[in-house]
Length: 382
Image (cartoon, rainbow, N blue to C red; front, side):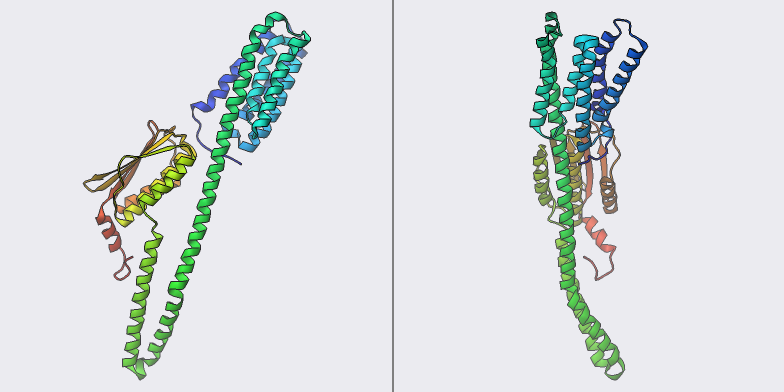
């Protein structure tokens, strides 16, 4: 299951910091003179390990399944590096076991991660039983065992959370796709039921009126009036259908948002009861709320979302704020489309990435619906 690409943040560079612990095996290796062959082999081993380490940890290179596979390879190389370097540099070779433990965490099953961590710790302790380590080396065994457990557990928890988030996003996308397909099918059925028979009658009566124009003008006029009546009835039915397509409103979208945020472990706070808005304005506000919640669930790493809707002299102001990572990341097509939609209604949308992400939408009042209707020809206002 691949994760979507995203911009890097400061936390993504922490794996580079952990590479600093290689100074311990490097320092031990250079304590005594080495032959050119030993130096070449040692540097090749270290270089290969660093490349594989970055392959596992670097966010621009990873997906859940690929990271899991490479983590096993990285753990095996860490174990091999430990056994190869143990006779050469002594106890500081356990540094590679700690790196290996950090890669163990990237396993889908907790049981697998546990047994690999147990194997790592057994390998770390074994040289004390065989006499490879001196008794005075025991002082660093306990902290190294602790680091092994912490590295394995922390990375496994982070990995499990990321995989769960990716699965949740995939389920949401699939639900959205199924809902869109169902809506298209419903619209197709409604249009067929509403207009199929009506248009056939209109065609027949129009043809009849054309044939009667010269022979029986009064009958032709009667048929044309009947066509007009049928057309107006059909228009009324289409209006009612379109009202259903506009959605169930901002409060219904708020209920769906609460379900999605609860599933993602994000708290939702609504400061006031949401008032009734003009139809087109409410539809745009509901779509903006849906887009904002989708972005929070997929990208924000937030713990809380606050929604405020307050009256203004020209309408209402909707503020959606989260406490996530924020930042001035490029906007997706969803927010760009919402900004254009609100601008067409006479409103506006701004985004602030300071201390989380804040979306501020100035929603126009009832006059926006009237001006939008005025753009349609008379008799075709929906």
